[in-house]
Length: 507
Image (cartoon, rainbow, N blue to C red; front, side, top):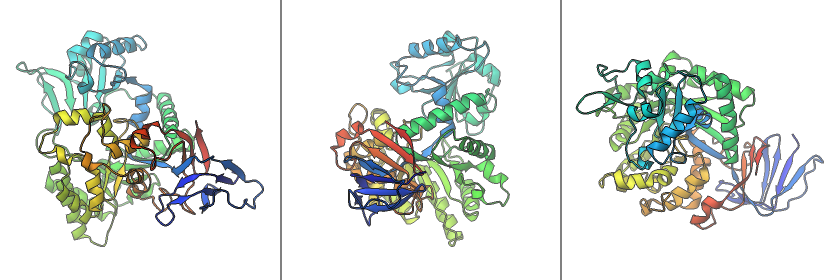
C-alpha cells in the first residue's frame, strides 16, 4: 500500500483542537499527518501518491451506529414491496404474482418494507389480499418497522396458526372481528417464525452481503454496528467468515442478543473483536411492558456486572424511563464498573428525561432519517401530548447526552447525508416541518454520524475523527455539509470512500 497525500482539500476533522485542515498524509492505512497547509512539503517517500482534491471536502468516514446488516443484505436480494414499488394493494399483489412465476411451487416468497400508511388504502393488508394474488406459495411480508409481518393462508397453515391458536408470550395474532379468524398480521413473533421459514441460501446471502457492502461504500459508510436482537455466536462467526473472504469492506461490530449472552457463562462478552454490548428490547405489544421492570433490572445488572454495555431498544417515554432506572440501579450497585450503556431510538423524550439520561451517562443512538421518511405519519398519528418530545435531538445535545446517528436500515435508507439533512431541517419528504425547535446545527448533525457514533461503539480511539494515528477512514464529498444551505444537503454526493487507507469506492 503506497503512502497517500491528499492536497487542496477542505478537511473537516471533527477534532476540536484542529477543526479544519487543508491536507492529509496516509501511511499503512493510518493518518500520518494533518496539516492546515493545502499544499504541504512533499513526502520524503518517493512512492507517495499525491491526490489533488481541487477544494473538495473530506470528512471522517461515516458510521452507522445502529443497523441490521443481514436484514439489509436479504432486503437487497428479496422482493421489495415498499413505497417505491407499491403505492396500493393491487401493486403488492402484482409484485407477488410476478415473484411466484420465478420460483418453484410451495417455496416461500418473502417480501420486505410494506408500509400501510403509504398505501392508497391506508390499511394493513390481510391474508385474503395475499391469497388473491398467490395461493400456491407460502407468503411472508415484513412490515416496514421490522416488528410485524403478514402471512397468507398457506403461510399460516405451514406455521400451524389457526382460529384456535392462542397469542404467544409477548406477541399478538391480529384477528377478524367478530369471527376471531387470524387476519395474517402477526406482531412480535419474528423469532418464532424465522425458525420455521426456509432461510435464504448461502449463495444468495453472500450476494446480498456483497451488494450491501457496495451500497454502504457508495454512501460513505465505513463502519456499522449491527443491533439485531437475534445475534448469536453463529452470526458472529458468519460475519467473520465474510470479512475473511473480503465480501464487504466495512468495519463491523455486533451486539449479542440476551440468549447468546447467557450462553457465555462467565466468558468475556467481547471475546470476538466483532462483539460489543448486549441488545435488549423493551416493548408493549400486549399492553404490558416486556420485560417488566424487575426482570429488566436483573438483566441489566447481569450485563453491567460482566462489564458489557447494555443496548436497550426503548421508544415510548415509559420504556425510556424504565431503561434509565435499570441502568441507574446497576451503576449504583457496581460503581467501579463503567461500561458505556446505550438507549436505542429514544423516540419520545421530554427534557427532564433527557437530563436523567445525561446524568446516568447513557449514550442515545437515534435515527434522524425517520423524520424525513415518516414525518407525515408522525404528524397525523402521534398524540398532541407526545409530539413536542418526538426525536428531540437538540434537547439531547443541550442536555449533554452523547447522541449518535444511525439509519436502522433496512427500516430507513442507510444514507448519512439524508440523516444529516433531516436533523438540520426537521422536514419530511413532503417538506412538512416536524418540530423546528429541535433542529441541529450542521456541525452537530455531522458529529452524530462520525465521532459520536464512534463513541457509541467504543471505537473513538481509532475512528470518528481525522487525527494522527487514527485509521484512514475518510469520505470525499463534492460539497461541505457544514457550509451549504440546509436545503442543498441532499444534493451533496460522495466522490470517494476510503477504509483503512484503501479507496473502496469512487463515483
